[in-house]
Length: 89
Image (cartoon, rainbow, N blue to C red):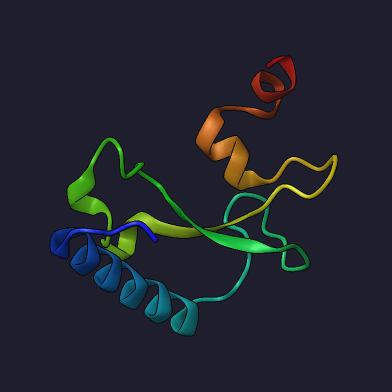
């Protein structure tokens, strides 16, 4: 099992708290395609890698659908570019 630092553990706890609040208070639909009937995940609007200070910021987190089989989900499109760019990869 990999050891995580106290600082990283604190960030993870804070992020999980924000995830729970968001899950309880917001409608569970993809903010990219407005679908309800797909598996969703939490997605950072501004990536954690670019702005670590926004990692646990409520307004920086949204719901995006996940890729399933041949269907490209909004989470992957948001993370890696447009659907056209993704197909070309």
